Length: 314
Image (cartoon, rainbow, N blue to C red; front, side):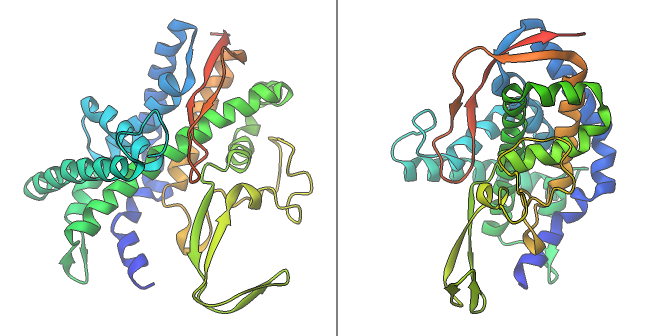
């Protein structure tokens, strides 16, 4: 504060429950089409064929990025989030990160200039023409805004969607329960977010002295928050190592808390609920068709590949 709230408010109205609710038919159609295409193959990589196309497609459409450029967003996100991963690395990790960030900045700098001349009904237009204290966003803050929206808008939900299906593979009894009872969809989404905790850690700076369980934290010290640990806190979740889709209450912090709560939480819930709505209707069972490969990252619990073979219902 006070900068954080001012910048957040520039785009916050695009992610309200009402605005996200208006996207529901579009997300449903996109999810249906992507699953139809995947079903024709019968076996494939869930990340490549399902979770990545859904999550990138949704945020790309919201931003106003044309379909032919969606793969650029996918590549830039991977290289920014996990520049140390051998599959994404080009040069050193720092070189990989800086190159991807520069490419994304240049892309959205041109797009922002065009939207200032010809605004459309998309988030790039909203942010590019937004103001703070009566002035346009400075270039670096403007372009960093787009980097945040692109990365957060697909990376975390993609990994929650993939990790959620992996959890159901490991707990087939829970998949059978979800297929029998659609009323479990909403609590299942919350349990997927808790279980997968797509963001591993964030750092924050203490604003005042504080004692937590006997550990003194002084004002100005950096504190690292580990979300998978918090989402299994034994004081809140006595059975935190159990994947249970009827968990209520489910006081997880997968979306953060307070002023830093995830701007796209409602959108993520919509995408996850839509995906698992269609998957539960289509699949009697699903199984791994090869080893799962995870992203080399200390920041996100990413999944690069998840080969799967599905038993189709419809």
